[in-house]
Image (cartoon, rainbow, N blue to C red; front, top):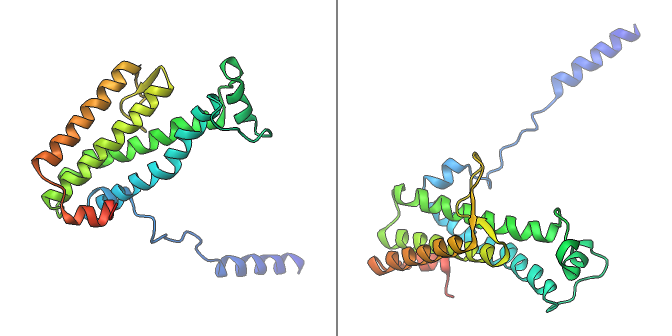
Amino acid sequence: MKHKIYYLLALTMLASSCKLDMVNPNAASDQQVLNTSAGIIALSIGIRQSYSTTGLSNIMVAPCVTAREIKGVATFTNVIELEQGGSNISTPNATVLAYWSSMQAVMAMCESVIDNAPKVSGLDAGSLSGVMAQAYLFKAMSLAELAMAWEQADLYTSTTTPVQVVARDQVFVKAISLLDSAVAEITATAPSTTFTTQVTGPD
């Protein structure tokens, strides 16, 4: 009798179980983002947001602590290591890794815009030139940051193949070429009001 009750209880639980895999309407797929004009615009806004928050905070903390321009909280090992410098900085130092990874994240978003925006229908010429120039600019800034902080860095990101690192002078050369591409974009076609309204805003 006891086993029958457990069996009935298990059947009842299975029958009344619900699906917990809910679709998040705020999480667009790569397909939706990279193949629609609205997605490219949203990604372009995301580039600015990511660089100006996570990116800038990481850009400022590590070098400023190392140069003693700011004082870190003494209880954080990551900051203590940066203050001591040299061989005292451990490989898994979270502040250093955050600096590197935040620039990689911005680069990856820029590369997605550069690779996909020209193929998307629905972007007017001025919006296309705006998002392309902005992607070139932010990738150039990210590369320059990497070159200032590391002796070697990658020129392109990848989630499928190992990245190749090159010497910092080559990274600076690539950053300058990206700035030239940005200038060429907006010289050929001025950014549209749509771009300035939706992406850059009044500032």
